[in-house]
Image (cartoon, rainbow, N blue to C red; front, side, top):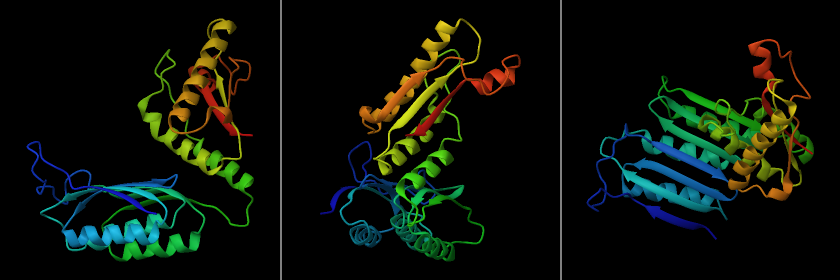
Length: 266
């Protein structure tokens, strides 16, 4: 059963909003994963909204969907087609985030049907002006590949970007939140695996202090994943201080490499 929550938006005075334009932010924001879909989009008419709702019902069966339609006055003629085709493109994924703004179209996520995704991406390109930039960062999993191998490869890809903390702190920088969002999504797809989170430091300070800091930072990452729906029982949290350096600690660059969080599936 498809559950829909529709919000057309209101002004501060409670009157239905009608002044958003194609060039307002956001033009379109979409997130799909864990059997949930969230869509915020500028629409050109009630007919446009109906088309999007029908697409959701047809292509996201069993998914709980929340839509926020924001009627626009200056919507380009191709906007209805572009928004519908992007929605269909997301339907060809297992989980994804997509957006359209002044910089172009961006989509990233995971798909188990590379052929279908490629066809729909080509269809989207066909509806766009030549100058439109499309950034697609999609992991395509091989159906013949075991889930364990697929999960390991995907995790290896998304953990290349480090999780950053504020200086001399166990507080994670907000710039790392999208990385944590992606980790949580992949953790959901790889529910049969445990996730090891290991904190490392450089050799500055006493080793007792380094162990404490590395443990606290690893725990901070774990708490962020738990807040995003990963069960605590799946997490293995450990701080090892400066015991396993990647580089020499006698340079700034070396110490920076050694201060890190490592995440792996087990």
